[in-house]
Image (cartoon, rainbow, N blue to C red):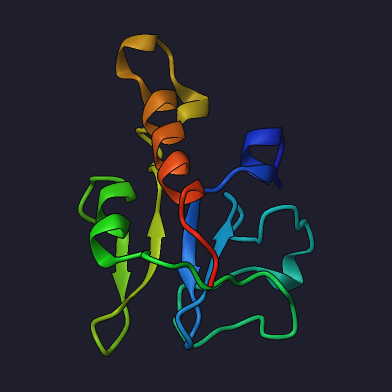
Length: 124
């Protein structure tokens, strides 16, 4: 169960559907703002929520950008059977900004920087 604003309303990662649109999801693998687990994102690229208006096609969202904003643990980028990235995580348990104990790690600054990159992308 999600317990705070960060875990409910801020992005944990992004997931792509079959037509190249992206959706942000929270710590429960739900679309941002959703709390109904019937809409939980699975780890499989074939699952979609086409009946919900939660996916967006972005101009210029490249694989390089996805790698740059994904957590750098080597496990935060998933590819489908065609080799296309379909899911990334912006942070992992170790780099979770809400668990930051001291400011020298700059987890919040890194997280906000990733969101800033995403926020500059235009919608198709």
